[in-house]
Length: 121
Image (cartoon, rainbow, N blue to C red; front, side, top):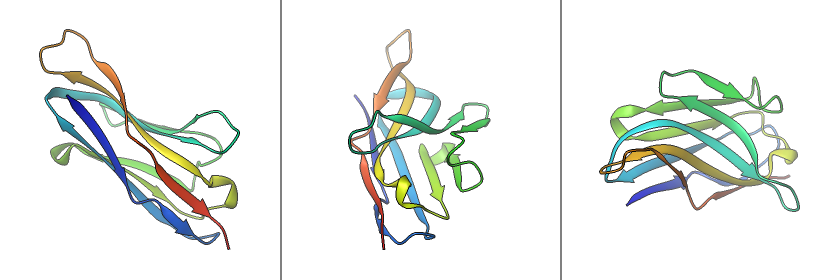
């Protein structure tokens, strides 16, 4: 069983910062890549940022220059540093990981339970 658990969400004023964390735990061999997605009320879930196993990163245009994705392989943890937050960043943020479970021939896709980020004055 593989689990992803997010933390770090909350209420912040416009222009403020938050750092989200996602920890992968369970019985797995390795993590291929991980990413952050978000879903605002009434909207589809969208990709925010991804970090590949080689360390390459990719961002949605709406967050480029404001958000930074990073990972700590030793801790099986991924981070999302969010700066200059805007009200339109308000959403539930989900951690996603393509992880290779022990005993499986192929990696599987896993999701965390989500953490709420609210940007409001």
